[in-house]
Image 1: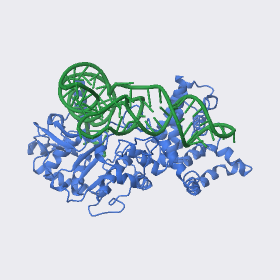
Image 2: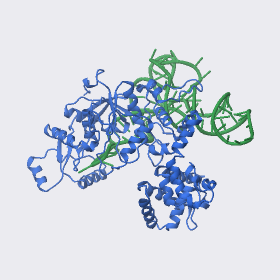
Image 3: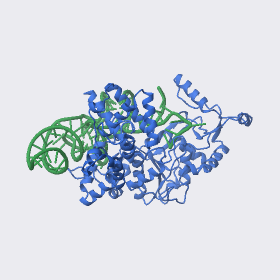
Image 4: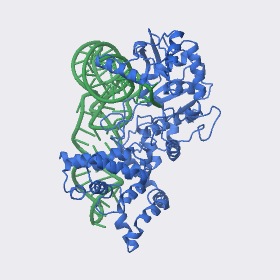
Length: 496
RNA sequence: GGCGUUAUGGUGUAACUGGUUAACACGUCGCCCUCUCAAGGCGAAGAGUCCGGGUUCGAGCCCCGGUAACGCUACCA
């Protein structure tokens, strides 16, 4: 069956698109990428660009994340027309404030028979999955509660069992939808699971919230990452169950690591906070993201500068049907080249201004100063003791970082564990101290060895201002990057 | 394993409706400039377009069959 033409997306209705990041950590470079694409699409067509916060996963929720997302998008200059901070006619724009809406809608589905209650516990489902996997079967919900009688439901309720609500995917047939970049994509219903729509905690899953919100917010074009293709049939089924028109779907290629896997913090800096603090200019970042997947006319003459373009130029020339579908590698080397081009194009005044804002901000200088005021005798020594705060590449030699009683191998293993622990830690003195001490204790590393190793990695030296205070001032994003680069560099020299 | 998507030098992209030696940028190497390092200029190497068939006078572009990579396969998004 082909998707029916959609009056909602005819040329007369205003284009509306959205990005819907989850506040689960640092703002992600992938959010910026999809954000840029949505922004371009809307602005080229006189449409609206909506920011919606998808905070339905209470387990992964990070309180500070939402503000960081706002800040990062503002930094890039991708301004939204409606969002949680500025409101708009279709709010609220934070899903946690819309739970009542989802519950009402799910009742509609229950009433018309396209969804059902299911009473298995998470443990039971996990056991089922494991046995299916063991039997080499595709892990899928077995449909045990698809046709429960009112009496059975009452029985489960009397037991006090919690329930979830699942989508009742037709047993037969298939769902076809159009991807604007790839054409029709078909999924047999035997491969579409009875997706949970409403969790037992009363929060919706992505699939439900997304479809309901996109409809209610009058989204005409869903421009999102390729990883969503497999779940699109569920969304189409939901639109149909509600009796709603479909938006257009555009699935963008996924940004990749050098090894072609989906971009991840293990293998690449992915936090926009990092890029900002490491001194990348927003224009260069946007330019680089615009290069990922094509979209801009390519250069043909030598040195015609076709690779360098600003946001206004993208607005003018970017075309969606030119997007290439292979997953582009996020190549830091080229990003740095581009950033260098942007830096050189700055006037001396602007360049100085950037230095003052990013690497020599009053705030940063004050914090660094506080750490060393007692440790120097002349102001000129400031640089001697704080150099690592202002450097990008710090690589300690083995005689600096290697503890006397440890082998290189066990030291690197421990450094990797430090990295993992630091990633998970809040970035305060109070959190970092116990985190590092607990790790040392667990792995039998003396506090002295433990801290000294990290000090060497961070500062390149065995002498420095207090370690934990220095970490806090230097910042989480750049610290993690520094440790990662240390490990990478050691891995490379080890191979040689 | 199942399903889906994708496939052009190391990387990002180009090649109008099939039409000369597959182009541009990054990176690499060399030369020039230069007190050094960058930047800049000039040049070179590097792919015969995932593989195998087919259609055609002619295929990176069309058809068939493989393969590989990636994604999804959660009460995560």
